[in-house]
Length: 150
Ligand SMILES: [Zn+2]
Image 1 (spheres, rainbow, N blue to C red):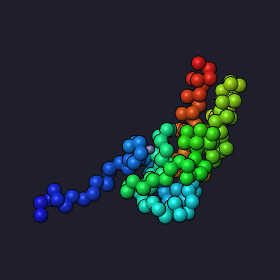
Image 2 (tube, rainbow, N blue to C red):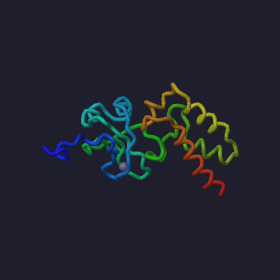
Image 3 (cartoon, rainbow, N blue to C red):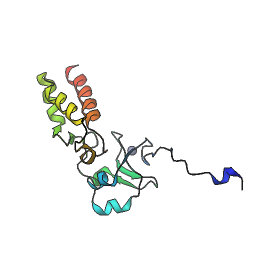
Image 4 (cartoon, helix red, strand yellow):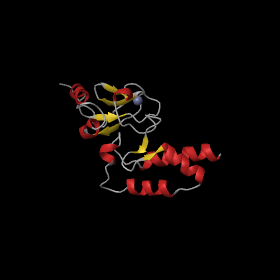
């Protein structure tokens, strides 16, 4: 048979969100299980991914485009949940950062960014995307500092 007809599936293909089309962040079953009900975990198959798009209603999805909406997941951080935490591991919220920016203090934000970036933190499980909260905290901080201080 011609080789073109029996090509291996392309493993390098990005896992794309069925709703917004952006590349997802692959997560473990443990991370998924920490944020959705047990029967929802059963519905999806690996590889599993988290959609990081701010405005997208999809939280998790798999290669077969089965997805879990944001409304069915719990404990999602900002920006999926606008009132959610920035770093569940260290309990930093959007309000905390806003207050610090207004007060001109960066100590708390700097401390969380430093600690969240270290190995052995719980971010892998508690963060919805299974990654360190460092990038999310920095993204929010820079965005809000520009908004609040002009
Ligand atoms: Zn999406």
